[in-house]
Length: 259
Image (cartoon, rainbow, N blue to C red):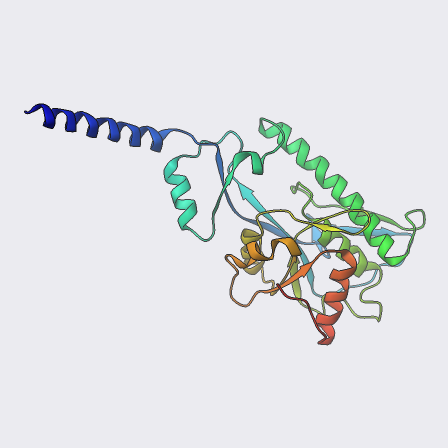
């Protein structure tokens, strides 16, 4: 074998070794998938998601579904083939691990953090909804119960559910108009809706569970369009007031904002 052939063989072996190492080495990414959805106007594990005391609660029709994603855990090993598959599939997304798990180094810490965020989200959703309706937390108490879900991204849907339970659209009709409406978004006590991430996967979860309308934080319209299921209508929202107005217009055939 000539010196040139030997050098080529060595280089080829090195390249192959690097490729094998890259394929087998764990990488700092998570693979996410469409997660569960839940109707905040309904029940969860036999208990109402929204319970109101101090004011009469309406009987509602239709559904307001919060949405979620699931991702490989913080301790899971994600390799190059997993990432390539995630890039090629429309029902998967490859995300930096720190974007999925910004706090905590293990499952227990992350679960505790997500549970705390969910509790805070429920409190701010209640404040936003009661503020929208001009009601005082001293007079109306709202209890929210949704098991096995963490994070702040259900805030908007919780707030809309409370508004629908207490007031509907203000004219005796439901905010949903009898539809199955899904959505996502954080919310502040003053009613500002914030971005959450993973909306392309959440629209797929919503479509899977029967929704035809999806409320999306306005800043994430482009992301929501990326893998939008057929027949799914996007409505961008920036505030709780705006979301309520849009749903009223949707029911009555008025002008509804679009992405």
